[in-house]
Length: 292
Image (cartoon, rainbow, N blue to C red; front, side):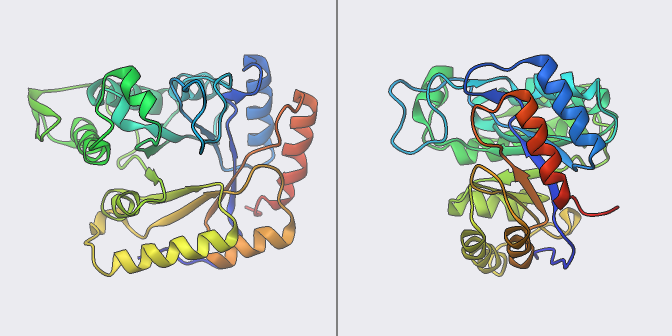
């Protein structure tokens, strides 16, 4: 079920839409272009529409963290790049209207020439669901339905119909449709429901802040689930994307991730780097970009 490989993982870059102080559009463009020139495979933009005050005991972001909308940011960067993949990592799907989101994702795919990867998660902060008026309980099933409905809008024959507990589409159509014939979906999260959704609905799985040892443990869970859960043949083997703990990586660490079965490493630079230092970080870690 997992796609095993002996090749070095692709290298992506996380969170150009986020910062401890400000998201500067010129800086984002500069780093995105540099990453593409250096051979990075992808850019990944996270999502937290709101953050609670005080912050939760477990979380990656404080309430004042500046985090721009992922799809808006990716569309902005699509205009200054031509090859690098543009990815949500991850979009909190149950918080969004699936019909509007399907339109936004398809439009971004058209504008980028077919470079969008949709990374999705279900969220872990109740205050976010409360803020948008969506029940926190049952969010995994809601998110699964939203994804199924979005795929129906993208790829089903006209008129589109989808019936679920949370989504009811009947006799409608929506254009544009994605450029990609099967827009890649990567499911993030470490819960049993998230791992199951990755197997049943995702082209890949995304683990955030994981060491190689943590990847080993999670992939054992994925393989165990794969023996008990049906995976559609059309999705192909499950690819593994991991964002290591924040900071840098070295040659030995990258090799450990490769041996664990990781296909893509999405790097998150240390906090509060001025743009020149961030550019230096991107250049330094280009050493791990596999040769094409």
